[in-house]
Amino acid sequence: MERKAALVLTLALMFIDLLTLSLNIQQVEAEGAIYIKSDGSINPSTTPIQREGSIYTFTDNIYETIVVQKANVIIDGNGYMLQGAGSNNGFDLVNINNVTIRKTRIKGFDYGIRIYKSSGNTVSGNILTENNLRAIFVSNSSDNIISRNQIVNNVGEGTFLWLTNNTVVASNNVSNNGEDGISIGYSSFYNTIVNNTVSNNNGAGVSLGFEISTSNVIMGNTVSNHYWTGIFVESSSGNTFYHNNLLHNTNQIVTIEATNTWDNGYPSSGNYWSDYTGTDANGDGIGDTQYTIDATNIDRYPLMGPFNTFDAGTWNGVAYHVDVVSNSTVSAFAFNPERTPEISFNATGSLGTTGFCRVSIPKQLLKADYPKRWLVLVSGRMTIPTILEDANYTYLYLTYNHSTKTTQIIIQISILGDLDGDGYVGPIDLNIFAANYGKRKGQTGYNPLADLDMDGYIGPIDLNIFAANYGKTI
Image (cartoon, rainbow, N blue to C red):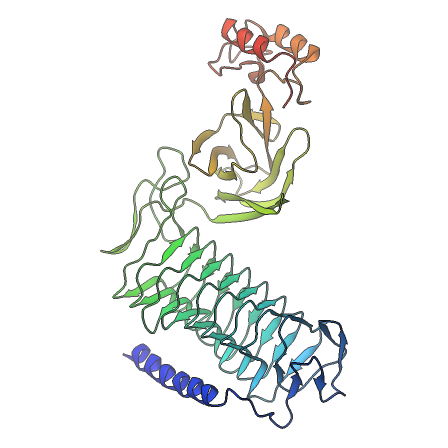
């Protein structure tokens, strides 16, 4: 009841706020506010902002609201502060498109940034703190991006999308705020909440509600240590949640009159839940039993370890990521696309325990069609992984023992018969193969790389494969 009453009050206040805004769409310049006007000028002209073409750069701290009336500009805070006195808005964008706000420390306002009836705007690389109502409020808008901001220690909510569609909230740190971390409300559709760190907020980590909001995707976020709940969903069905880490929240999920999808199918999988107690007998990194939220909300494919995503670079204009699910701490990720393409990373864990990794590799980035193959080395030793595939990804699952040393994992694309790892099947490989011919697994000198059919014996079948590939390169 307390939550419901608070929501009703919030709705009432927001309707009043939006009504006031709509009645004043022909803005009267407020005393003390700073304007970046539609003709590009700055009023007052003494404001410490330097203009170079479409880029406006702070040259000192500013202590007033900035109203942006010009489209297609970049406002660079240059690390300086935009500070209020506990009311009004920091940046105010109304009916304005294609504005970028970056590198600004914003504190002490009601709304740190307010975007209304605007699209194509980007808010990135800012620090928002100590704002009273919402650090970032986007309403009646579409196609905006909120990324790589520090949204921390605000009195109210972190980020709120209201009557907003097709907006991306990505790679932000949203933590220690007085209310919900990220909220989607009142008929907001087709938004993507991805790769955010959301922790220790006083309300929910991520909230969907206030009216029907559907077709939103919440994926790849780490939502942790919320006293009330990690995710709250009310009266909003048809949303999809997957590849999120739900860690040590008092309630992982609270749902009211809502049915949503909590996985991305098999083998892509669902979410990692810190209170999941299932096992993985078939070794695919996915629990063998479902995680049940309630009768209509079920994660069919819960992950056995936290989900990590790593940047593998941009190739031909496409940004790629490699995902790693592991019970180890994963670090030092690298992707080398050179002659022998290679993914590498380190894995550490408690001494004497068994570690596992499930590595998801986009097929458009790397693919091992015959006669190519996956070559997996764990601290220098060849390991044969479990391999799963769907239309877009290859999934490699492997296990290892944690020790006092860091475990290095290297995944390469190799061609069958390339035994020296130079990307070419030639005379050196022939000598290595000949020295191993006739050996069985367990015998001294057995080289698993020469066992091309991986049956434990280097024999005639392997010779035929080697001969067919002689002279080939990756």
